[in-house]
Length: 156
Image 1 (tube, one colour):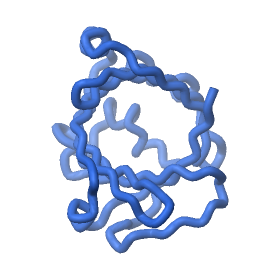
Image 2 (cartoon, rainbow, N blue to C red):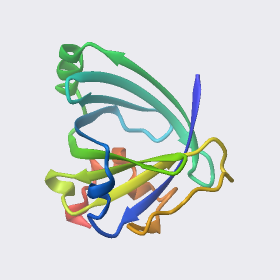
Image 3 (spheres, rainbow, N blue to C red):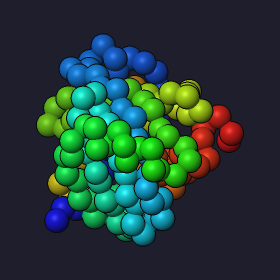
Image 4 (tube, rainbow, N blue to C red):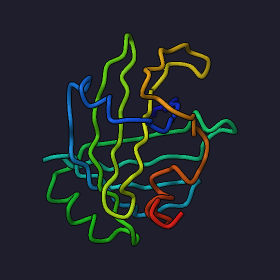
């Protein structure tokens, strides 16, 4: 069992693209989007994943996360069973000193939204904020992918 500690930020510009060392295409859906037990199916390039997330703590930085790779064809089949609102995005990885930022550039009904996440080993861990990082949105539920699938950015 694992605990995920992360902070989430809006992104101010596409300057991060020049610093990226990897770019993936992701398509994901939710078998269950209840905030107490989110069950996500993801296809990332040619890999499939099943992820279960528990509720966030009060600050929104920490939550239980369990993830397993599953066969690609099974992931694609499970996407067909998901709740309405499939998320599509490009994910960029950018190394900034000792931390890896993942920047999601959303497509479809969430186009125009770009969010960066950085995983930490503790809630109080110090990290460098690159100049393309904007306002922090950690803990704001409307930015959770499970909520973006039901209430997309284009409808805000």
